Length: 172
Image (cartoon, rainbow, N blue to C red):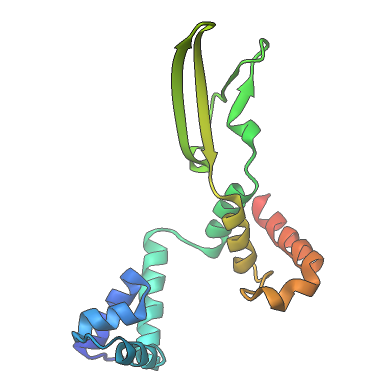
């Protein structure tokens, strides 16, 4: 399978950016977006280019030990995160962090201290990772959800059951 130099460059650029039009413009030095859209689409439908893209993706997956199962597990962890795994309450009712925290569940933590008439106080703001986005990605990865809302609107309960069924085998 022999690609031209530009086809190889396009494959590598597309693998980096995920944007076919942008990759085409970078490799073929054109400023015409419409022709770049058309030409990049045509390139992606080329069997040799498609096979090279699969090779690059497989190599990256092996390098970073990425599999569908590992992606689903990470998304499940985010989707079903529990604030009790991050915070705990002591016997006086004070809130503190758990002894061990999976910081991947957090998008941010802010600690602010203030002094006032009643004494010093501290406030902790915690932003958990995006659950809804993780659930949507899980649904997409498990094939439980079509990207077009009108296609699955009449069958939401079946989709939810399918998502849960798919997830149970990955979260055990």
